[in-house]
Length: 259
Image (tube, rainbow, N blue to C red; front, side, top):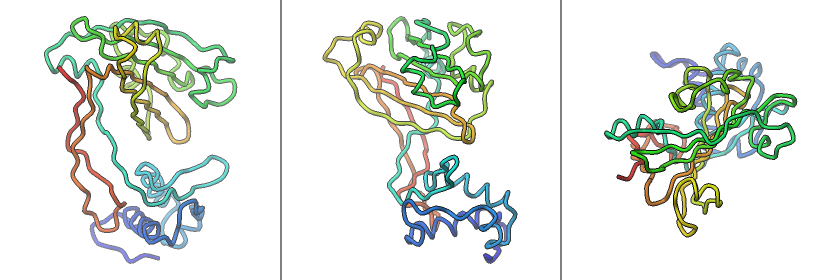
């Protein structure tokens, strides 16, 4: 049982208790979190309230749910994320440029394709793949590979992606509850260099984004940017909530383009 605090939802109070347990190593990394019914009895709450608290802690990177096994503590860690990344077409148009996209490929991946493994869908579920080249005033600035769970977006292949971006379509056609972004520098392969019109010595920035709806993977997207045409920048305000995760930040703005 926890002491109720006026004006603060019960699920928020439950979150704070669990965060404190993690921070104080009462629940160390890899600790299996008790079931929802057990926690509901402990906190004097409904299982739905406990579930909301646990889901928000998953989104914030404190917990991870493994299907068929349970929920586990990731542990305290430094966190710094890029948030609110705009669709490339919006970004170009806001800066006064003209966005054009070229569809390099669009279709369903063969079941035995190694690329299908990039999106861990249920056996027998089709994976759609699109490759688009995005240009600003005729200059290539982004090569987009997107892998889509066909069960979550069955009409994906019917879209004209020279008129609407995959991002804009999926935003209205699917539901996403969790997003994971990983950013690293790579040297692109020959086809990517040709499409982006860069030489073999130029590094690129790769943004690898995965999205889920609950436990179901929705998309995996790989965005490749020429290093001399793009940058990633994010400004954050340090969180000051008592008992909040160490090193957590609240984004104030972000931008990516180099003119």
